Image (cartoon, rainbow, N blue to C red; front, top):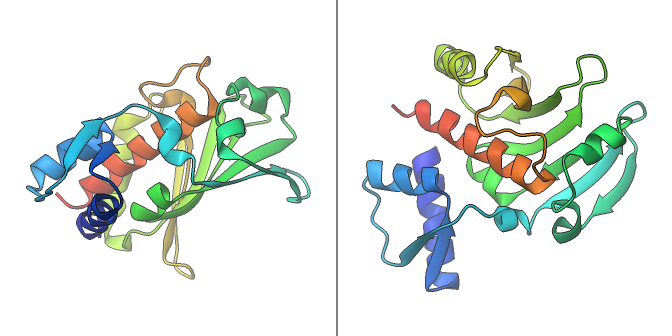
Length: 194
């Protein structure tokens, strides 16, 4: 699934522009899979690739939308915004997440344990349970995660502590946090193809 989606993304970006920006992990994946690409690739670390995302702030208790946010404004906010507004969570949908089989990602500060919690549904077959569990166990410091397969939707429901992911720091912006989440999930999905 990932290989086909990455190829499609490359084709779409190539027709739209001469040079495309990709994250280091995406470039490594393209090289590893020997995907042929005719355009030039530039490595980026910017979360501006999420500027075409749909973002909502939502009340945790009622699940009512508080506001629809513009990416250029909201993603620049410090991650501590979620600590200051503990009654809400951020929800994002992005073509980048869709490419890896994730419809949307919720990010919130856990009320009880005070860590940044990531919740999502991942479209990967049930047979990848051991690969997913091993990846999460090895890559999340402290092992704070929950994993269950939802047979009705055909999705893996995954919750994990962003604080335990390498590269996390309290001073990051919300955009940097979502970029870290994307990279973490991209590498997880890539593991299912090995």
